[in-house]
Image 1 (tube, one colour):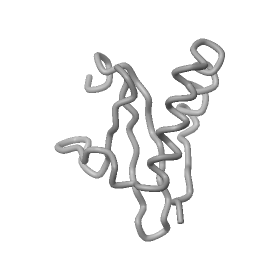
Image 2 (cartoon, one colour; image 1 turned 30 degrees about the horizontal axis):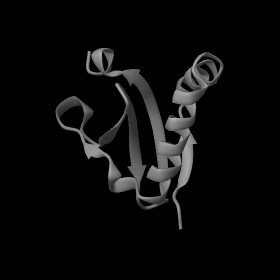
Image 3 (cartoon, one colour; image 1 turned 45 degrees about the vertical axis):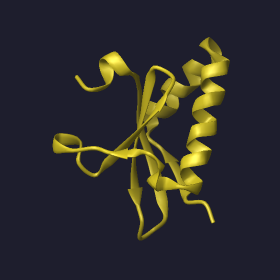
Image 4 (cartoon, one colour; image 1 turned 180 degrees about the horizontal axis):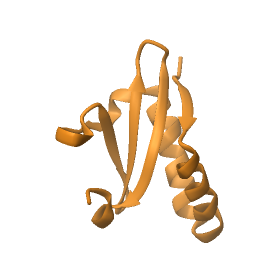
Length: 87
């Protein structure tokens, strides 16, 4: 059974803008979110200051998320171009 999906409010706003600007990329992000909800371990675990979070690439963009295994919730935190993602 898929995990529950939660979106950070800032990410929701960003995705709303993306839907209007680049619907194709928006659809790819939504597809990735659904895919991750079915298999949360799909993304790469991060280290150092981002420890406890995971990331997965969507084209030249990065989608960051965290997993709450106990409550079976995946919280999507940020979506940013790779060049800006790790600053």
